[in-house]
Image (cartoon, rainbow, N blue to C red):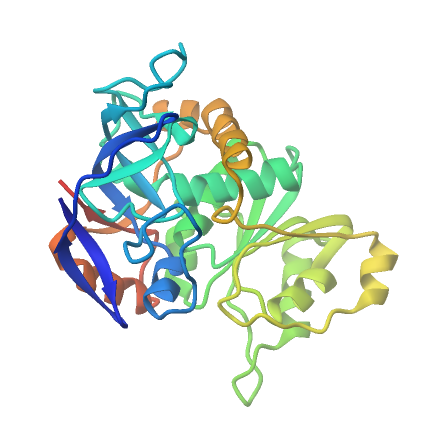
Length: 334
C-alpha cells in the first residue's frame, strides 16, 4: 500500500505492507484522512505516536470502507462488517491506503454523505463534542466561547453548539474568518486585540468577550493556550467551565487564582490521542449517539478548505501550516 511516511523532518510516499486486523480490530480501506495540527508537530519530531500505531505514518482520523475484520469481531452483532462505510479516530497511521484500528473506534458513515469529506469529521467533531458535552456539560441558552473558531475543531464546535441551542462567541485572527463563521451561525466574533508591541492584550480580549456575552462565557473551548487561558478566566461567567484543548500560543500561562476561586470555575485539560481503547470507544459511542444523526440530517457538516491527493501530502501540510485555512484540509487516499 502507499503511505505517507515521516523521514527526518519531511514527508515521503512509501510502499508498506497492508496491515492485518487484530483479533478485535478491523482494517479500513481509507478514502479520506483529515490533517490536524498534531500531524505538523509529529512531522517536526515534537509529538511522537503512541505505542501500538505506526511510528512514522501520521494521521489521526479516517473514513473509508472496511476491508477485513479480526477473528473476534464477527461474533459481535453491533460490530462493523466487511464492506461497511465507517469513520473514526486512531493514534496514527491513517494517512495511508489502509489503516488498522480497533473495531470499537469505528462509527457508521450515513449513506448520503461523501466518504472522502467524512475523513475530516472524526477528530474535529469528536474533540468538540467530548469537550463541550462530556466535559463541560453545555446546556441550551449558554454562551460558548471558541478560540480559533475558523479551524477544523472550531467550525465543528460552532455548529454543534448551535445545534444544541447554545450561543457562540468566537475569536479568530482575521475578520474574514469571523465573517465566514457568521454564515455557520456565529453569534458574536472578536479579533484578539494586540498591544503596541504585538503581544496579546489579555485584558482587552477578556473585556470584549464579556461585552459580547453580556456577562461572560459559560463554557470555553480553548484551542490556542498560552495567555488566552488568562483571558478565559477573566471572561468566564460564574461557575464557568474552561476546557483546554490546544497550545498553539504556548504551553505556559500565569493564571489569576483569585478569579478562579471567586467565580468557582472548572478548568479541564483534554486530549484524545493518548486515551486508552475503552475511553476512545466511549467517546466514539457518544459521537454516534449525538453527532452522527446531525450529520445524516445535514444539520452540521465538515467545513473543507481543500481536498488534496495523498501523493501531494507535502502541499497539504504546507497549506495547513500557513494558518490561512478555514476548516479542514483532507487527503484523498483512494
